[in-house]
Length: 103
Image 1 (tube, rainbow, N blue to C red):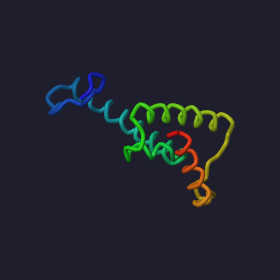
Image 2: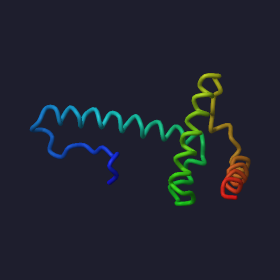
Image 3: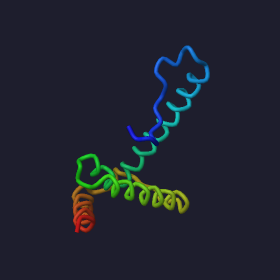
Image 4: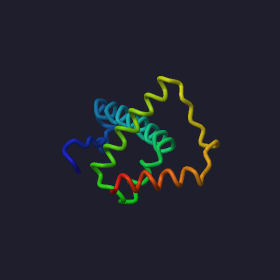
């Protein structure tokens, strides 16, 4: 574990403050997981990180940029509908982006 990684308490039911911490920790984790799911759905480059294709530092940069782009899309009301994407087209785009990023 990293020093910056916060984990819930084990057997926190005996201590009210630890139980409260665990509840807040769980809610925060759910929000982060939901957010990452949204970002991975919209920005497919984020899905490549789990395959070990990119160094974790680079994946973190991708996530930051994708989050910023996502916020821009929200601000300018740019909708994303994955049903309207042609899979061949997105595969070509993803491959091209991946090739540029590794070069």
